[in-house]
Image (cartoon, rainbow, N blue to C red; front, side, top):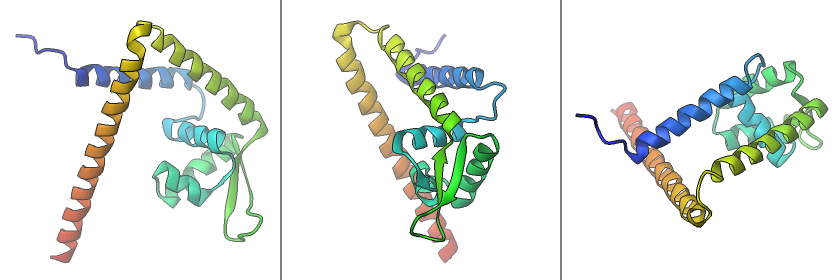
Length: 159
């Protein structure tokens, strides 16, 4: 008996397809999903301190340093002193990366339009509401699980 394909099955398939497409797009480059996410954040928000980037990307300061080191070595970002905080460093997109990110944003918009084009116009609003609802609920479930894990870890340390 073949199990029924669920919405979760389809969402997992979509996630895997996006990962394959991203791996193909960045094959032969030093870009990983984490590095690309950092570039995307800089393109969206502009220059930022490493601390602020670590907070927004939800990674450790040590992790952000490694990401920025690799992107700087690849010519994607530059570091400069913070104008008013001697301890802080500002990370900015390098000039060459700005054009690269504009291309990536254009490709992103085109793919989004292409994918949404597969849905009947009358169904698009419902699809978007459904995807938002699913993403919101999944965020809630992940956050609750993280809180349970933190509470269990705190109890274990306290024992």
